[in-house]
Image 1 (cartoon, rainbow, N blue to C red):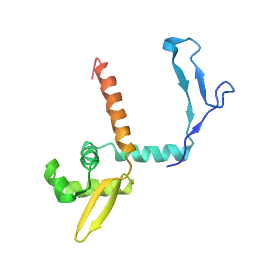
Image 2: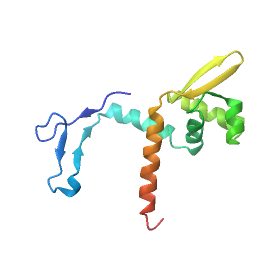
Image 3: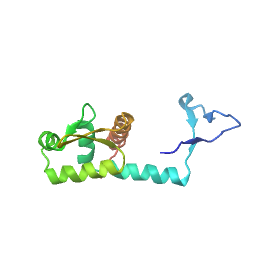
Length: 133
């Protein structure tokens, strides 16, 4: 994925400006993403949009696992797990390692867990304040 470019605010090269209203002494940082970066982010977001994929990512975050181990631990069908692993591999979220007749999958980047934690926190906060569905 490409780099995010900071937008300079108020002639500040750090891209940081103080909230003029002074609300909670908040610091505002704006980032500018070009279209290619947005396309890449959307591609990854789509890959993370399935709860079974998220469960697989969490399971393989601590150690590499075979398809059969994932099937057993998550109580999903083998074709379903294989499909999701194919999608996760396509989006570069998992690494694949072959050892003899076995194929093992592991998380490709530990920062994915940070993304999942942040998404979970945001979802919890947003849904807790929601009054209607």
